[in-house]
Image (cartoon, rainbow, N blue to C red; front, side, top):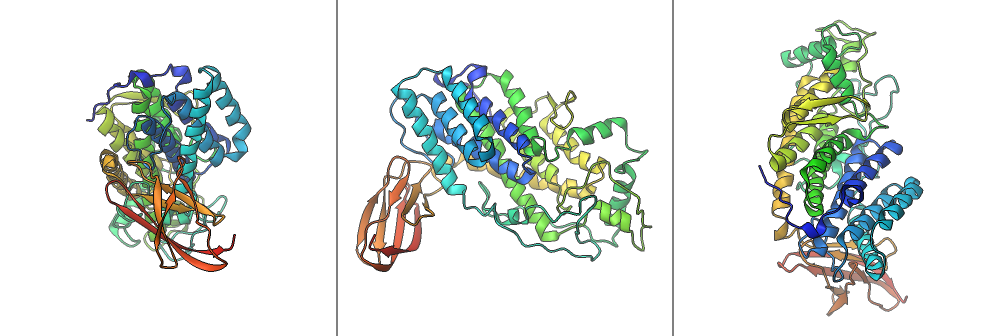
Length: 483
């Protein structure tokens, strides 16, 4: 267990004005209001958590997770955190801009006005812009390859909507902490014709059907409690809601709260990438396909339907299990074996009690079997993958002070870009034009730089950023001179 101490009372904030809890809740509300899918919800929560953490750490003069920018002296951390979170959510959820602006304006009314407040708002927005610059072109909005097949064991669109697979590109999204998407790829599902598959199919058909007589009343409630379908906070938001409730009684300072949420959400976001890698590597069919269609080993049950509606992506591995395994690994590392009670956006008015985070994760995994939308092996391997991702994320956070290395991001207009490092602000980069002499390009307090002027024609520009620890990032680009 890792102890969290409230060791920075200057960052403490009353519950009603606490920017960490307030904007975490606003992220969940935005996920719900925009019907964001569970893949994208993990990314939104990770980005909001990171901008708040990196804002507070920059002000404290400490390494961030993605960026550290130079903060003006005596920057009010609560104001800057409000501004950073508002800015990234307005960027991620433009349709909710009016509602988010109203929350931001109200949050500032409780804080002292003046030049320091204006300065803090500008700084928080700069951190949000920096994080957005790093992740805006991570491929999460691109189209992925689709492999639909009618072969036994292979995924195909499922009733009632028969939708195309959701977000196959997520298997190629660069992770936040992991080295690569397939780092914890599981071994794969048992194939049709094996006893392992036959047993798993019968189990799901028996306990997961809409009219099952073997599923208990409590298992039915649990399936709905953890359903977290589109239009709710999604699975990642469910875990955030649970943690938000827990932290309100923990009396942590803002820096500690921000660290918990960042660790949780980076782990869950990477679990989504690892889960997508498995789903879109194996393209395993859903129980509804295998049960309704049947085969030589299993009589077809064309009228069988699951308790829950089947999501439109392959079965192996279970996303809920991966998310929950990662969340439980992180939260157990932080809080230990802690009993808690949590509610559900999917089942308002109902709460469930758990003896530990791991028990909750196992119930979340089993709920997908009880709901008839996964096989047990989907859930078991999902939990294992999620736990591995969670442990890796925690190790990454613990070593973040050693430096993740610099990052150079070119802007879309071709006039310059951004240069960041998580340990110390980047103040300058080196440029080489057409293989000639080196020149120094200044980087401003927001991490921005502009390309040098050059003569008319096409030129090759090589840019290099070096961290205080000696790590190097190099980017080459072509540019048109004579501007």
